[in-house]
Amino acid sequence: MVKYILNLLEKIPYRTSFGLSISDKLKVMYYQYIGQHNDSCLCGGIVRTIYHRIGNDVGWETSCDECQFIADED
View 1 (tube, rainbow, N blue to C red):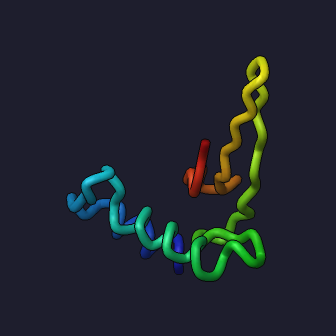
View 2 (tube, helix red, strand yellow):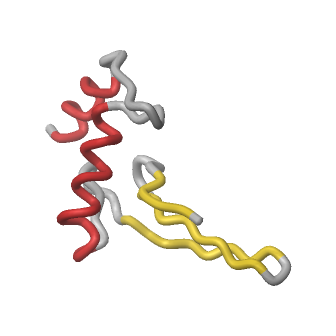
């Protein structure tokens, strides 16, 4: 049911100044307040942090494995 609602919210033509849809904004808020403690996404997927090393620099990306939403990155 949650995936269906997120899909409907994705179709609304509203975007924030960063280009996020309403469903993306809900995913960010869910991850910041609830999902960070149990590594879960609003869609039901698992949020994982992947580290990338390029030369001496280290970058990381926190994203959902099911909906591919990037919650945070550096």
